[in-house]
Length: 418
Image (cartoon, rainbow, N blue to C red; front, side):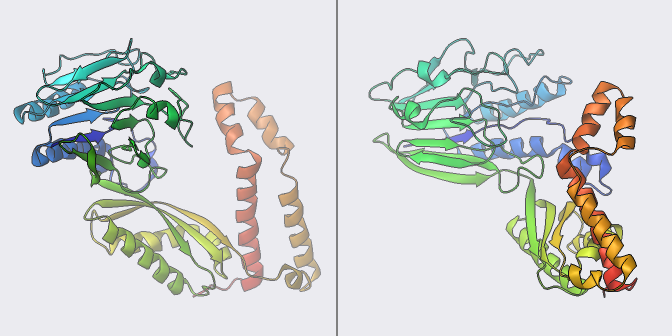
């Protein structure tokens, strides 16, 4: 029997943009998270005494800003060399041959597959042959899998490929291929990279996206890690076990506030969701994006007193202890419970306000003339960015926030919800 680790998409030193906008963000932890997760991968390989490690592309996040990135990887490979563990890796779209301009000589236990053609490499001392090819440039629209050779008889054949398969949300379509394309090769295991969400495509044969080693933002929520694969003496895959590597666990927490009439009740439900997330993180820092949903009398208060309410939620997070949970964002997606027709009957002024708000929500196709005039004199790069901020969907959100604040004031007549 032999065992190997399948990892992908470490994105070493991936920049985490926009953190300076969040007061209290654990910047040092988040900036170092990709390195710490990779160190966990190397330590796992040593602890488990695996026979080899494969990395299915995007080791780096782009060209090195300095040699520190390459020196870090080199040092980790020396740790594996000292443990007698060889490493096999391919380049993905983020570290394609045309992207990385700086180079360092790697230890002799590391084999980087060719980017010009598919290469097959036997693992010394084991009945294993690994087939792989890296990306020559960032965009690879052709089906690389079609050039992979048929399985070598009497060997355990492992395919190493960076691909989007038939497409995955949030990922560029690179090296597209079908599941059947991979099946037809007759390999025992396909170690895939590029898609950051861990996914087992097939168990016969095994076709697996390991996912990335560390989630880098709120859209990469949930556990991140690698696969520990055991192959028996008959050269059949015996087990494919998940192993977590992440040091920061991103979570999207949806809290249903339906029926909540008091702020204390809302905070109690949020606390429960935070508590569950902390318990499931197994000691990792939780980076949470909270979505508040449901029909609640607090809808207008959330918009009117957004800054104060956010501070209340941040205080809840602090109750769990330093370095336990960080609130990245609170998204208000609740709905009101007031009766608009009843409000409109209160008096003539209230009716006019409600009709004006309704007209505002209906007229979102065109920008107001004064805003359009201001945008027209801006530099093109700035104008493009601002245009996107003023698309109909974004404008609808702004109008809805204003609407909620006004309606809450009408409903409560200036009073506060406890």
